[in-house]
Length: 407
Image 1: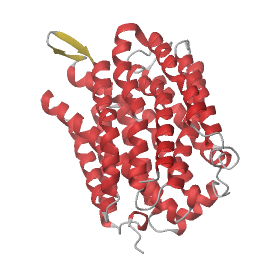
Image 2: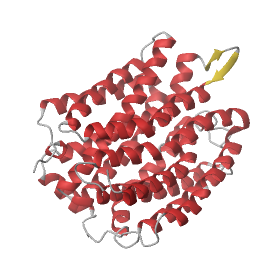
Image 3: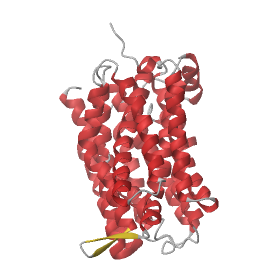
């Protein structure tokens, strides 16, 4: 593992990110069901709003990568935290589509600062022998924000509605400003390398066999999991349960169920993501874990579209959250490996761009398909993407970026 100082730095970065993420995560559970209270007229508008922050990140990745050569990590985090607090507060007052759109674009800028800052930080403090554990530690801890946002957001919204829920989560996010000031060193290291431009990253991808597949993996995983599954899960549950289930004489709504099942993933990620990273650090661990994770993800996503008995269906829902942890952690590790060996920080910018593209397209694609076809068809399509990538990966030679370099 990285030394104690570097480990503390990763932990602080992750916990601040978690606080910033609570309001965004809440929105994916609540907005599809409470969109009329938000002043919106259709689910198509919901899809655009949930994708807007991801679309704006596409052009922002290269300039933010350059920005981190000029500013410290602490400065980048502080700007991100101020933006995150302001946007979550705006959710409580927004009553028109343009205002929602503007707020989500500001959140996109905040997340770009947090995401690229974390990738650069992990690459800087890790080695080939512990990169998986460093990545797993960060991924596991920052997703505690998603745990709080999705689990509590669904229940709070069912009780007080969208606007009250947004104001509560703005109050939760605000302390991250104090945490950034106190926990992140003022003289945080700047990146002095000028390699963060998109052209340099793309050339590095083209020069190195297999690294384009790493970027594609990030794009597909982001399209399917945070792009499609997260924004539509409450709708899928509503379709399969008729709006909710009765437990101990109490009707539990689809928003609460969606928040609960997605929050289960964030509850185990502080332990499972580092464990996945530790296993990936072993010789050959990248390949041995990544291939079956894609296959399992495809099978379980397809099962969610099937008319299974509810106990089996909920078991598959639990399984896809396990597969999501493995897929997101392993693709991040593969990207860091590739960046360490060819392309440097610029390759991470390209990887982040591909992931953001998948997340941006996901909600628009999902809700667009749902208008024409059916929510189950959206999940069959998602399963097909995971299977196709798995089959293509197995036919080719494992990319050099995923092989452990021996000395």
